Length: 110
Image (cartoon, rainbow, N blue to C red):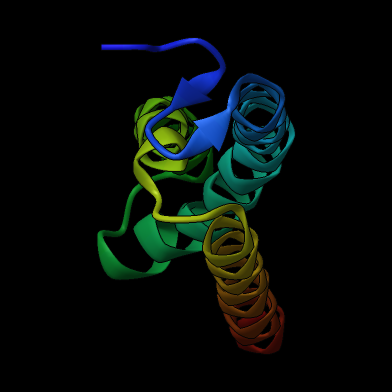
């Protein structure tokens, strides 16, 4: 078998670009997703489980690290870069929306 320059239908240059883009999306997008998840889970734990604010923040921060690892693994398992970017944006916007809705509820409850 001749593997000179062809890795599963991709040339070596295309394969390297694919890995580079997935690594960038995993690191930058994963960090943003981790921060957004931490922010959006804090009010959820505070409102639904009646946990103190400091404990809710600590719990959501610790869980966001698990989501970060999962995001990194998922970014290399996605079918294509376009699908990965689309799904990443959907996840980020969903987390931001949850955060805004729940913080407005907390502010109005005060």
